[in-house]
Length: 182
Image 1 (cartoon, rainbow, N blue to C red):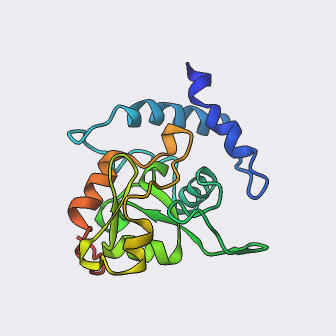
Image 2: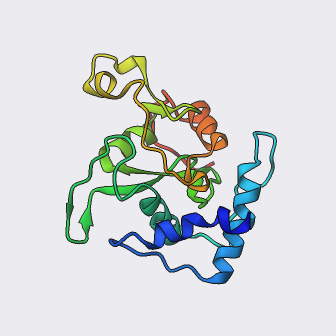
Image 3: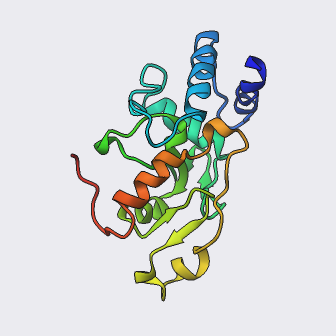
C-alpha cells in the first residue's frame, strides 16, 4: 500500500519540463500526509499546519504545476516561451487566511483565471465543476465555463480538497473584492 500511494512520485519526476527531486525523507512525509489528507473532513483541525515542514511557496508551486501538467486547469491552455509561461499556482484558501502550502490547496491557473477566482467571479464545486456567478451571466466567462469540469490531477493527493473548495465557496465566491489578511 505504501508504494501504491507513492506512484505519483514517479509521475512527477517524469515531467521533462521541470523534474521534481524527491528524497526518501520527502517521500515518507508525503505518504504520511497523503493518508491523513485523504481522510480529512470539515471537522478536522489543523489542516493549515499540515505539510508545513514539507512544503513552502516554491515546492507548492512546483508540485501544483507538475500535477496539472503545466496547463491551466480551467482553460487547458498555456502561453509558453522557453522558461516563461502565464501559469500560477493559485491557492484555493490563500495564505492570508491561514491557507496551507499542501498541493491539494492549489490549482494551476492562467493569470486571468487566477485573478477571477481570487475575486470570486467563479468557484469550483466538490465534483470539480466550475460555478460562475450569475451576476456576470452575460459575460464570456459565464457562457464558456459555467458548468464545465476543470482538469483534475490523476493522483488523488494533488486534487483540490473539498475542505478548501468549500472554504472558497463560502468566503470568496461572489464577494468581488480583494482577499485581505485576517
